[in-house]
Image (cartoon, rainbow, N blue to C red):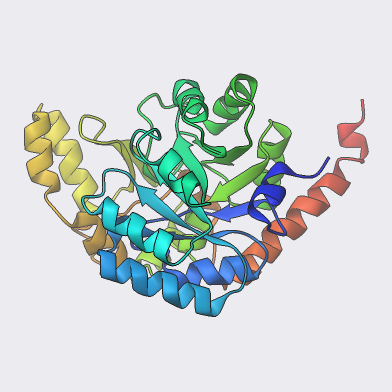
Length: 317
């Protein structure tokens, strides 16, 4: 049988680059698409005119399919949708909201719709809403995360058991071995974010990229669950959050501490002290900044060599 995600997206490899705020503009998306994966523009940090600029530049830089990630809590979402339809973006990944709201409208315009979920329940709701596929994202993932703290190892087979549409695994995947593991658990493809943050084409600040490369096991923690769960590198701002918890601060006080624009300050502007530094646990396995095409090549080659390695005695019993 053909891989369902390859067929759905018309791509060479079932490997998707996540749509990440402040990190995934047209340069990264087009580079991943040109390398055989599916690149995604992260629209959550873009004003409407900026998204249009990125879509136009991405179309000029690649003749391969690409997508836009559309956080449904975005205040100007209607304008983003207008841009997506106007420029005939073929695929949209929706997140952070109810997939019923826009799925049918987008599909009426010939757009393939994928929704990001963090639980079996929301995967089933997304399927019922008519999406073409879901991304199931485990607790290991960077950025905003599910509240249940279900790991990818557990989440993927449970979602696979519960739905019939194609399934994309995310969270803690950044290598070919991780890709093979996720697909063995039942995924049709993988979505990778953190590894592409540390790419040459990523729009993340160089200081943030280096911080990701320098990260080790235990460098990140999921926090701020009372507001919206987010996995952060443990910098000075994170320590302030920890002290706020020790002082039993209310959710309102936590919101005041977070303020506005901290993710931009940290990830895009390179403020490693006061910025919000969102990244996944897989950062402990990221050791250098590379071109996106080289990252895709490395992952696919390791994926294929790992399949071959499974013929050795270690796996035969």
